[in-house]
Image 1 (tube, rainbow, N blue to C red):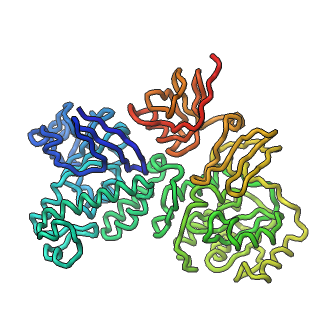
Image 2: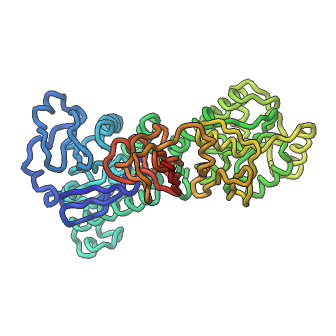
Image 3: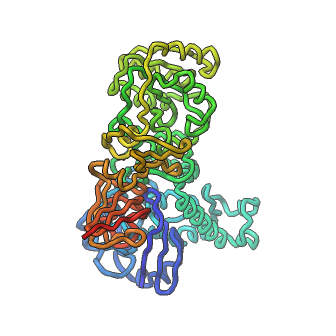
Length: 545
């Protein structure tokens, strides 16, 4: 008997448990696959090259129900829900990053979501991070044992001559006893354990960005996955817990960053304002809690729409400063913005200013942010007004900013309206709504009835049942005729809005009950999986039948 339970998703990566007979182990995992899959060694057609033509593949790969199930880019996928799947020779794909991602996409699109991916003979301490990032979760010791036979010392940073074992790099039992094979196996187990932990913390991307620096092919694989945004976006959660560390140039290509920019330019509805003020970001998040932004807000006094220019997100309207990842990112501060940063951020700002017209745009910026604003102004054909060119928080600059707005009327506070448009893509009438609480822990009410609150852990609005009544469509999960008692499991899902991503706030709708909660997987996975939690329910309301 074999059972796969997926517990946590982080992009393509998965953690969970694999049960074989009476033994359960957490994955990603490395194991003696000869014991786990005894029929594998005698099975034919398990070494077909990934690039082999279709006719050759059909001849040599035979269908069967033994685990793991062989899959191939040129083969109609025979895998079913709950299978362990195995693309043979995957270690050869690591040498060709572009083809690696092409094959990966091909296989992912025709393989059930609730399968466990096994990469035979591929895992080393130096590459298991990118394999797990690609969705693999099961490995063997073949590659490390081969390196041991070749006299190579394996570490997460690469493979070195065996005498490196004497350099004090590692203090494992293998190194203490001079057993190279044992060290290499322990190094692989340790790295897989680290990857598993990072997936559990929703921080695998940060680990991959750090680890891949030692191998150009790994960097290229990450970049190829990033650049196919349409394919990779649905796999990425809508929000992660903790800090999003944008410490490398690749951070600008992260799905979360690109998704924020896309929604800003396509969904977000700004308040009605004739004047916009471009402001620098701050290290403290949300910006409004920083000393610098308190001073900016005092000078502006609500007489203009505040837009924060920042890397890597590009542009953050004041209304979206709590939305993930605007309240959750951290970036190295050097005072220098390179050409790639400037081009990316100025493009976002130019598109925003072209779409959303203001009579006046004031630049209260310095350094790289000011350069970006000037590039965007030139591209969008607007004229900037300057209230400073250095020291935006200085008294003289703040006084000049205040005087520049002397004749302007106050702009209506549209924080809730802006967040709703960004998160749900709808135009909700927020007239008459009041907020209470201490920023950013805010609750919105109308006629003493709570409608929305801000989840400061994820930066999302949480609608009550009455709040959902104001959201006309979308982000619904249809269930069969039952009343949820706890979380909604996949077998109970009838349909789901295709826009739903892991972590989205959703409304569960059935004939017997409705419920509010957070999606635990994408809509596609809800509809195509056989096991797992679809929605983590927060509140249930029975309906009169």
